Length: 286
Image (tube, rainbow, N blue to C red):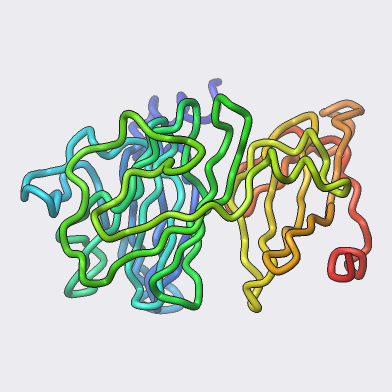
């Protein structure tokens, strides 16, 4: 009479815990299964059939040394893909690594993977990696650091660099260089929570900057705040530096009688009750 994972274990079901994020590249669907320490690829063969493969796991070779990555890969959570279809894997842990994968023959099984960036800021995890129209530039969020100063950073890569990291970060400068990066890569702060709090339109309780989204013009970054009390959604204007509140919630009411969720552009649902949306025109005109 047990439900969920325990019931599945009783009947020897395939372990399948915490499917956290999806990414589609061509006709291949990629799925991060966090609890199982792997990323699956699902080839959409036809309307009625698909081929499922292990794309990346602890058995995948580390490009830096040619041996399996082992426990260095921990809690693969977010996925991202660039214009070339390369898959990036973001870990949900502290310190958290961002891995870049190599699938040269595009068969849905990565030949190797390497640390592309490593975040060692106390209490934080990297999340919401987004490639921009400039193939050298990516945006990533630093979520729930112990300091409380969530932040958005831009990472600029050097395409000529082929040597990635061999170890995760342990000590970092949160204010100026939170990421350990390969030589030739650079990092630039876009905005942090301390700066956001100077804007009267930003809600002070909006912490836990999670899986961000970038609008097509790349002027606006939408930031979900994955917390119970004080959850919401804001829009940040990269040109003016202004914030607009798109959604707020006061966490009131009863979870049973009112549907509750927290905003997240990727798969987390939890405790926001109720949610109050401003008109769409307010979001775009603010």
